[in-house]
Amino acid sequence: MQAELRQAQQTIAVKQDETTRLNQEGAKLVAELSHTKQGLYEQLTQNRKLEQKIDTLQSLHMHAADTERQLTSKIAEAELLAERLSDANSQIAPAKAQVRELELLLAQATTKVQAQEQIGEQLRAYLDKIATTPATAGPDR
Image (cartoon, rainbow, N blue to C red; front, side, top):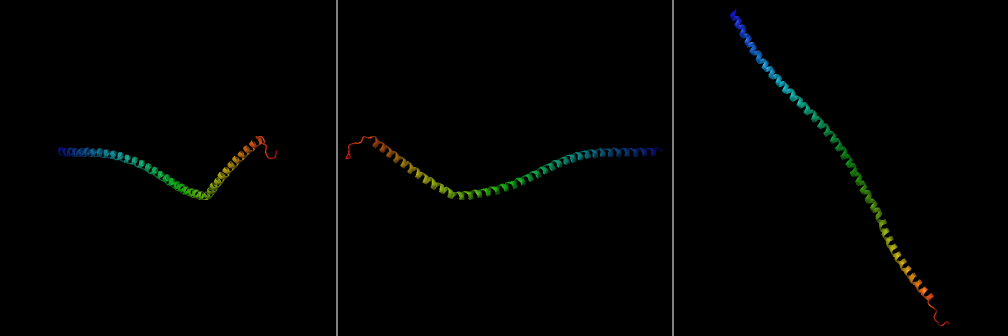
């Protein structure tokens, strides 16, 4: 009976050692699991942030594409306006030449009018002088 008791005590000691070892391994696995959970949580947080960045980048990409389309449209519009301006300038060129000719004719006419006014003033002055000078005895008198 004592042999059985010793045998049972040895078996119990072995089982206790095994239980202690299993408890230590379990505690170690719990710590690893906790660490793994923390790492997984951090990875999920990073993934969410990356998804938000991707959404932001996609939004910016769409905005850039819209802006590029608007720019292309504005460039085409500017080219059309430049072409219209060129056409208008070429249509205006003969009118400008005609205006220059008319300005030249106006300047010539103004010069003639001034010359005629000057001659008229000289003629009036001469006539006034004749009218105010006493008549000198001439062959009629």
